[in-house]
Length: 218
Image (cartoon, rainbow, N blue to C red; front, side, top):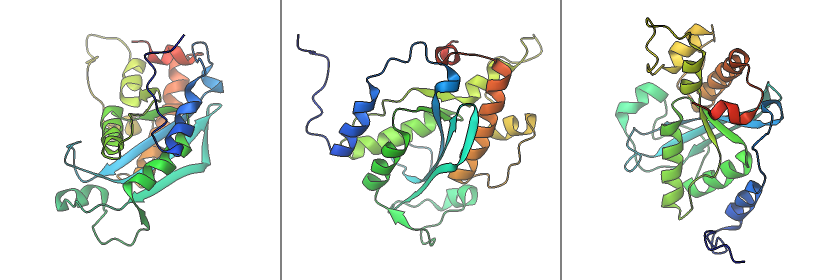
């Protein structure tokens, strides 16, 4: 029987097809210890996913409850758009001496790196939306990966009490302070990815969940 709901991807680039082909496995009962996570962060020209652009992407892998420091990913994108107001935050300037690649090439390398890993980010919606906006500009579908937000996960570790706001949105700085994580290289994509990865491991230790699906429960 034909699968009428499956989109034909034959017209898409080979790198997308290789990435897409990795999502046939069922993770319903997969253990967290057997899952590869990619913790990521982006630095951008601003916060508007339609008008602003990604300047850099930083990623690090977590597997078997360990931070794989040697298996990291850092890339800088060639962008014409420039917002001087954000330089104070991320330190990237228009003529900085970084080796840069085109947005399409960055996406190609990023997809190859992440594969079918579970993506993790702090306030993940922003980073994922920015990446998906870049995918759309390059005539590519949205990311297929499952996504976890350390902000949401951290909130689950808080003791349920009338004195604690269960809906509070915690910043990465607040989470790092709570776990005594060094904020060196804060506001660089790779630096924030490492900070988030350490926070993620500490959160996993406190949640004490065994299966991947349990991390997605509300």
